Length: 114
Length: 114
Image (cartoon, rainbow over all chains, first blue to last red; front, side):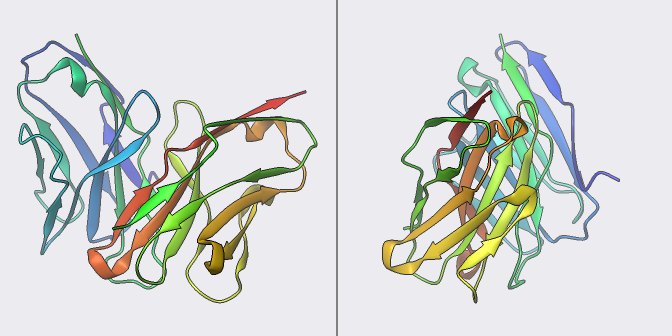
């Protein structure tokens, strides 16, 4: 069973479109994250979310919005896609408030905006 | 503010040679520290983690890391590298006191030559 799964794995779309990337975790975690990995492999946190709090990296454009229908899902919605949005997006999850927690990652979604 | 520095962007070693990847962190409280590995086209896999106690931690695939508070370092080591170790390695700091965030270094790309 995949612990953190993302769909789709690859996404090619045109500028200006709106798209969503789905993420689901079956670990029972209560905190989920979205990271963006650019072409230089740098991992930048975009959002972290649990059922109480959304923490947004202030450098993330408001075209990006996380949507969580329930504790096991955190989808990433992107409006008006731009060329610079091309990257690999990783979803992750962890246990909130645990003393020895780490983040578990999905396999990534490679987004290409043309 | 928290930050993670990996001074070496790229390292090349011969198969069977020893390896050390450097990581320095900046964090005001007791850090939670991690090393992740990313194989091409894959997500991030946890190699090892440090929360407290013994400053030398053992991980998977024969890796170990040593936490040195005086140097704010958490270097990753392996006595004998295998060709399958070629990957991208990320050091990360966790901040359980501030919303359970995980911040990553810029990564070190490891090439293994026969």
